[in-house]
Image (cartoon, rainbow, N blue to C red):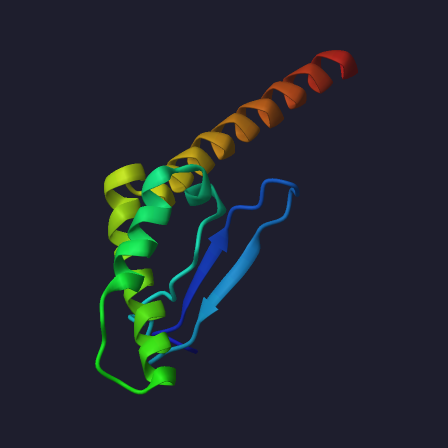
Length: 120
């Protein structure tokens, strides 16, 4: 009925149900992800130094535009700094989620085996 629509089953660790992500046909997903400041960066010395270095650079613009550009540049600089300092955190999280899913599956199978033995 909807040949180009994709359905994804998302892993949920706190439930035996899976959420569905439905991407309708023709929906573009190549948007750049918005910058997100990570709390863990605050514990690292390089974070403050990165922000300070960007903020000290002069930008020829109105006051409002200058602040906006500095914030954008801070985001770019922090993203680069994070990659070199921490590697790919998203990839690490993805790998850990896979391991967690495997462990949950193993636990479920073990519980089922125990239940079968008790019932017999």
